[in-house]
Length: 124
Image: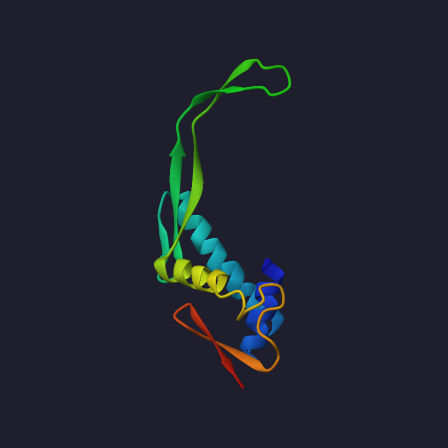
């Protein structure tokens, strides 16, 4: 799912939001998360996962073109760890591929109901 798909889905789910409102909401949420991470903080969304910063120490790398050793400086990189409920949901969906086709999602005669990031497909 891309950012624009998320904005469209949010606007469709909440009819009182215009596309601009949904875009603003997504921008504010992502900006707050990025600002928190840039200050060295940790962002946790229960049931979904957590974002934190990991430090990669300096090391000696190798130029693949000519094989010369080059120093690679240390750096901070963002890290995402999936929450237990998200891992269970992904594992459940991969184990029950006969119920849900990952390419097309639920059929039009089924309604996807999500409760705390745990999805159930309920025939309508």
